[in-house]
Length: 397
Image (cartoon, rainbow, N blue to C red; front, side, top):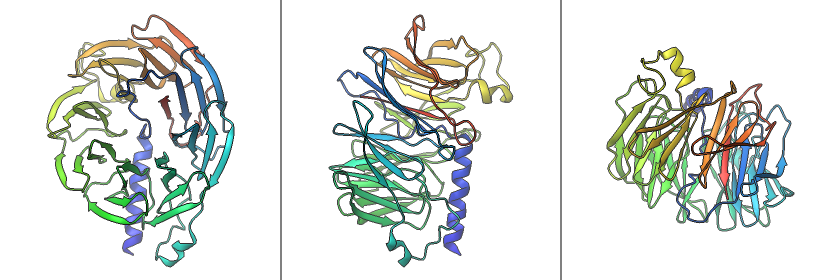
């Protein structure tokens, strides 16, 4: 009875998040590595993937999926010369990074060991929700909707260990040092990355479907209500931030950049990474940003809600459905650019002094920082608009 109640609450939490979720949760922050990136990898909610040479501005390879049952964004990781791509249908595929050629496929299945636990997932579809395989040594770690966290040896595709949970899992495990940190809805687990043994756990009150983020020896978690919890690597709470904005919308994971943590979708809140104190706040519906008058809530939902937020060399860049806005590190609006076509902006990213923008019609553009020069890199990028979340992920290498 209790297990079914927990499961019902978590499923409702997931459905709530899915209605508005623009996760980009598996997309790593691009800033922080000095080496210039030469390749761009793009993944969509249809399971399709594209690789580009961003020096020559050309498509290297594409691997499109035409399956109406694949309608949620899943992510990918880099391992040696491979791209390890997760799919909603519980497949993980190793692709040759330079050609996109499929080298191996791992098909996840429920472990026979689960029969010894008093768990019932008969009403939950067996899939990989929002998985980005975490790499630890030669193993990939991931979770499935039937409550299993797994470690699989990549060279042999044999399972190293399985940790069983009583609830469906909607986020991906994260590695810090020799430990795995996994958000399972209302509890954070710390497991041994080598053996899968439970080391510690921490219960929290507000539900979350986001994976934790790690930096240094700190772990950060964002809840559905906008609370941010910071732990050290022993799961001792360092600080907790609770927003005072009752109408704060949360539909994407937090962003860590230098000394700041940014959250929010209808407005941005900047939190001091060391203390958890509010640094600044920016509301795009206020007068002077898009219009001379404060926008109504009806307009706000379309014109000002943030679809993507990424770091740049000077600060941040966000896009709404129709605008691209650059911000300083102190939250000051630097540039506002209205997209010149009636096409909706799906998402963007930044690298090497250029923005990369994907529109709903499936076009990928590369534009300079002043928006004066724009180049079309690809048309007809494949999305699934019949159901699921309209989403895209960028990774540079």
